[in-house]
Length: 445
Image (tube, rainbow, N blue to C red; front, side, top):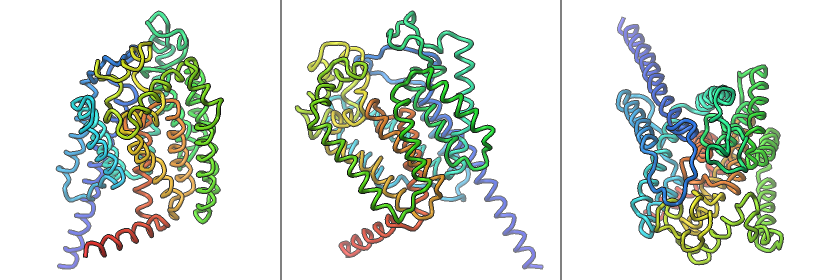
């Protein structure tokens, strides 16, 4: 009788724990969707403006929304304290956040830097907590169906309101007139979301039937074409090729893959440093729809401050203190909100050491784990690799690293998921961690 009662009690506790975990996941899912929609659509639908560097104030409603998402995740943990412990922020991400905090000591606008860094830190915390609680399957499914709803909303907006299409009558530049933006603030915000939608329905789709995947992919590709988001249109095909290559990848071949990656990076670096064609493009103010002029200004500041930079988030949109006014007096100073190159923006804010650290943590270390972890499935490895590669290339023409943009949030999800999955898998990365922990214990004793 006692054994039967004890068994019934255990079964009751297990079922109760499952129900509590599902309730917690529901709250976490809502928080993740809130964060994603705030980064993708914002709080002012169809809002368009030319943001200059005098615009120091943030979006108060967006900040309140991010804080509300954090509150939901806190409630989920407090309400169900006996459930699985939340995932901790990976040490590598914590190091990057620590370096950003350190940069406040030399920031040109410490209060603005601190506010932007707090929002980025909250973004990282939400993503880590959500991915840890939801896991890969639930996280990707939530993203998929959120993106499908956004895709439908985009088409409805285009065919029901002129505000969903860029127009010179709305004070926008003639180069974007006629380009679709849907419910997004700009076509360049729509492009990455549509590209990620395509990748999510190409790889690791599990039980999602092709009869649904094909229409979503075709509609996303059509909207991407009509948006004329050139960066995403150029970057998406190689990202898909990387994903396809990962379908046939064997972790035992990782050294050959790393040799190819390092060789390609060395060739690209040599081209950037020594190619007269690249130098001409950077000096040409009209290159890449004006990006050459922006990059030229950034490189001038890098020559002056190569090691420290202006501080986290303290170059663009900080008011009269911005160095851009001293370096340039054209439209770059008055109508540009970022450098259209994530790596250059990192150098002008965190210096060369900060840029190298960020690239290692956000791109190279997750890729190393992805290539070395044995138990990560091929479809999931393909999707994660495609997203990371897409974000890495996207930052050559747009700026998203260490921000709260859609590209950075999607990259964060991929990076955190890679850490989460690699921690459960054997591989070279685990052997390296064990050796480091062993050395650390020996030094400590």
